[in-house]
Length: 216
Image (cartoon, rainbow, N blue to C red; front, side):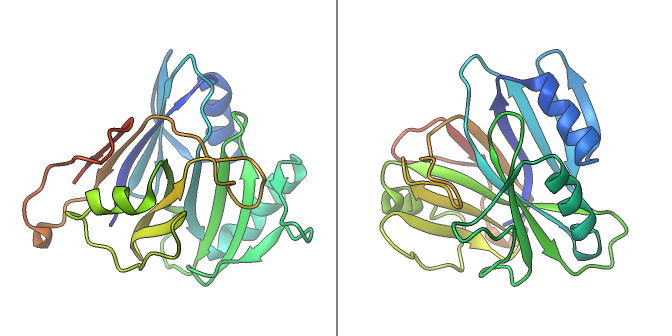
């Protein structure tokens, strides 16, 4: 599952635009007074203005050779989110590389994931998008048109997707690691990259109705 475009909401588009382009040095695609979009490898990360303050968790893949310099820039801004034992840089159980959690100006929890690559660009992909739901099993069942190589881990947490990208399904109000802040539901729109072998393409109707739109 390649996450081709992910659209989230923000109450601080100007601050987020400056953060993603000037601090994280992610290339700007377009901006308007109410929205902006940046290029994360071949994927697009977009934010649209909303009155309600949202709270998201997502992860981006970065070239392993660039990880340390970005981690240091994030550390200098004092926005690293440490594990309970005080660790900053950790080892990802799923992706088998270094990872770092930090917060953007909206308070979203971002995760930096290092991958070995020969690509010349630093930013590689949108690797994970967190999706809080009332019922993890029911929501996963509604995603049946999209194959997944991950088994359910528990009734409150599941990775759904493959090595190219995942939806992180969690029960609403379950804390997002490494914080104690509970996951909350806010609008998310996701476009998946075309995969002809998957068969019929179109909108995935998630259940129960949520402010999520997934198009494959």
